[in-house]
Amino acid sequence: EVQLVESGGGLVKPGGSLRLSCAASGFTFSSYSMNWVRQAPGKGLEWVSSISSVSGDKNYADSVKGRFTISRDNAKNSLYLQMNSLRAEDTALYYCARGEYQFDCWGQGTLVTVSS
Amino acid sequence: SYELTQTPSVSVSPGQTASISCSGDKLGDQYASWYQQKPGQSPVLVIYHDTKRPSGIPERFSGSNSGNTATLTISETQTMDEADYYCQSWDSTTGVFGGGTKLTVL
Image 1 (cartoon, rainbow over the protein chains, first blue to last red):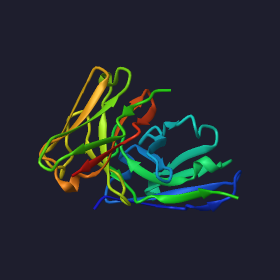
Image 2 (image 1 turned 180 degrees about the horizontal axis):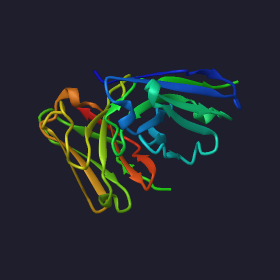
Image 3 (image 1 turned 120 degrees about the vertical axis):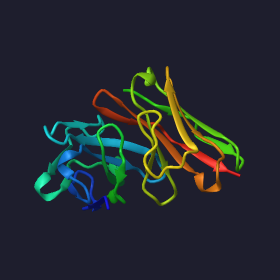
Image 4 (image 1 turned 90 degrees about the vertical axis):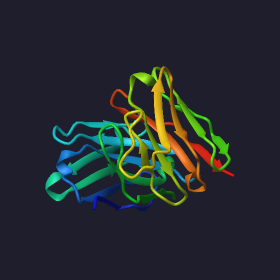
């Protein structure tokens, strides 16, 4: 069974940092591009970042560029999101999602709350 | 920045056809995907590459994409189809979602 499980969310103060993880199983992780997508409470979906399968090309939404860093460890079947200089507007449920053009598998999400 | 625009809400009676649109500049030149999200659940891919259905998605879900508009069509809508629906595409290397459409079946 294809499965993505996010972890690492929590409460952090503005300006703080957090590292999210996504553990993948049930498929050949190294063969797939991966993404982070977030959803603020009561709001819509927002694409955050993507990383390609082989070359490791990384892309970011303008709203997080320079503050967030996506990475992957294919040996550990894991995806990461390092989030620095966090702001209140980064408060959201963060999903990892599999795919290059479309996102065909999603985790259950991990909640990040940025508040003093 | 590139934007995808969706009508905030659509209502349909059970058994009728629901159409949900997504507009963006030259959207038809890119692939569009659609996701269904029910309250408290993660999104589910229902249409990709404009018209394709993933395994397990009922045939009543179909899609089209031409010009500036992509459309998700749900035929013979059922109460279980009530959900938020999001379109998604790419602006070069940046992913973009529409604002979402709440489908009410009543």
